[in-house]
Image 1 (cartoon, rainbow over the protein chains, first blue to last red):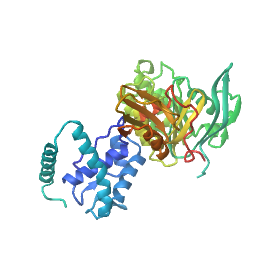
Image 2 (image 1 turned 180 degrees about the vertical axis):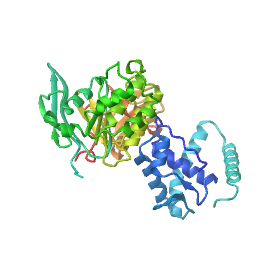
Image 3 (image 1 turned 60 degrees about the horizontal axis):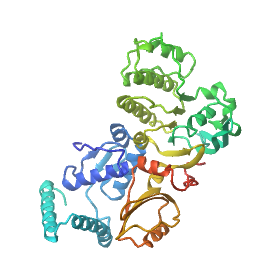
Image 4 (image 1 turned 45 degrees about the horizontal axis):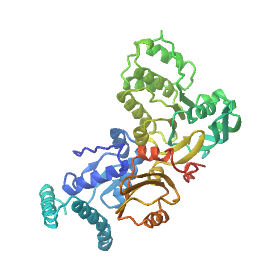
Length: 135
Length: 309
């Protein structure tokens, strides 16, 4: 696996969340693709020097989200994304993220136009990185 | 495999003269976990560990390891326990290898492969003399001597004391390696909260002789929350808020740290009429520092039924 996960134990983000976020990001940008294999719980724990239960929790969350799957005796793999989240639930989860983004931008005196521009730029950046390999 | 806690204390108490060092401590450590024992210097952690190991008699209450009373640990039970405290004595004139052979004679279950493995992990030469070892290397040797008998229960009293970052990392790696066996339990005290966060499943916090938290690490983290409130003018006086640990005010801001932050707490804070209210997540170290802060309530026990049997 080419992905290098970096964890920061002092952070206000729990370690298991740092792992899930980095894996989710890697999948979203195409650095990890379907059929890629992730290290076993034990292997990742010993690489990152953390408790295996923390890795297990991260993997369990990702499995529940339909990002990865454990195949007994074979390993942990990235799977095609199923629609696990109902669109209205997805919109509900998006709300606070949008609020944070807009309020922070306003606090920094960005105009609505500047924010829109920055947003479009970032979106196309992501699309380019993905290279159209992921849905 | 028994479901009994591997470490159990009930009303464990110790006085040194008029000073209470450990006050009515109830602990139940389940098998197979990594359990961190936290608290400020002088809060009673080492005293507790000495009582667990039968090195010190309690004034009240009881303690047991692997189901055996701490005051009467049999050689058979002692052989299943590994412990590292500050007083670990090794003969300076011996070489690393000789120290291993010497220790091996006391333990029928001595595993030379484990000894060599830990020695190697810390980069120790078996021919090196103990008195020439640096602090970190000495700690590695002590750890090897403790782990080689393949103990079921490992009790470590501030094992990272005085160790540099590399040696500390090797120590944590050894602890994680131990978790390969589901029936192995580690109970350790530490001041390095970043290391604790890497490795611990549960934690207990001793605050000047009194147990103030005993729960899974994640629950402790989630339970302590910082809330920032912004006001148009000077912040109002804070009424008694349940779970308040600390409050810090600036010109038009109030920063409040709470435990068990819930809707009721949020309502009480919103009633102050802030322009904005934002909860800030805390890292383990900050949560710990706020929790033990001088100002604020001192009588909180976090629900810890998962760690109690």
